[in-house]
Length: 432
Image (tube, rainbow, N blue to C red; front, top):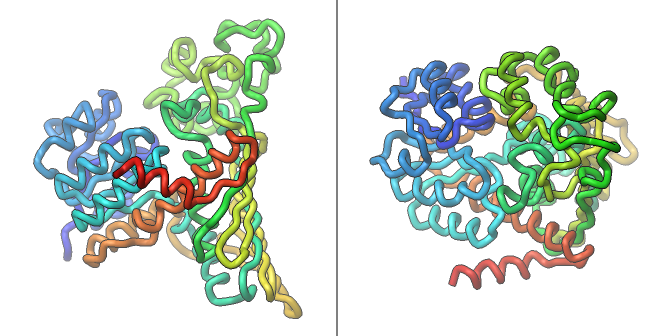
């Protein structure tokens, strides 16, 4: 029996430690964590306690770990957006294969530089576009690929972020500012751009987009609102009161869901006492109308692909649930899908409709509708095969980033139509 692939984790946050590391528990025959890096001692302690990583293999910084001789077969890079490429380049230099959290980078020139480095080294860089690995989108892609709706003509897709999730991640949280992370569309929805490109099966040519930071602004604060929720005379009845949200809210409160995401992002291994202290002094206790956030809270994108196929995509903070919906029309039928319900409805013209209930299919589920573990299975299959390009390899994944960055430029410029060629030429010029 083959030995498991050894892995070092660069960034032991909610993705590296909480989403990907549990794969070792489920599949010890496939993955063994042998090293990790994170500046927070409590996260490294959790890595040691849960996965038996030796103290001398736990590092206080990415640079410290990646400066060592190669410690494992592969590295999972799950740090903040603007460190992804720096860490991935260092890992490739050390001979690692790389599983890279999305987005690759908000700088297109960096994305292209990493793609070139992967080509030069012959190492694998698989980007964590986990939606391709879910049953929902895999089944949808299969229906389209085998011609069930004829030639695809239009795609309509939406991502419903959920009001509480957006406030947590994009107002109070790590992805609230473009200069520290990425534009919201790239960070949250490069998944969706990747799915649109995959389903279209052809290159995207032009993009137009509208959107703004509409609601989470100082002028929308309740009268007399304080800087922090714990001091706020207006907290009674406020939907976004941090005390209510992180303690009792059914979506994300400690009393309702226990010590898991998103509460464990506010504080590691949350208890009521630790959570109260974190909300008094930390970023997640701030008033959502008085944060330093600048990313859009809603956005719509129109896309033109080769051959005349058109697509539209809308992302909104102002929804009750976190889920995605999609509709494809083709010359011989249509497909509608709801990822929360995990159902697809195929309506071929002139024939009886078919309903695919993917919940009824046997198989393993994990985060992102099964996509997180599906991604890891695919990564280790890729390492075992000797191939260099996987389903979401760097070559396939860059275009979704061009699409998202073109949309963000269009949004900032009032909806001007932007060509992908325009951005690609600029990025190549920066590299030369």
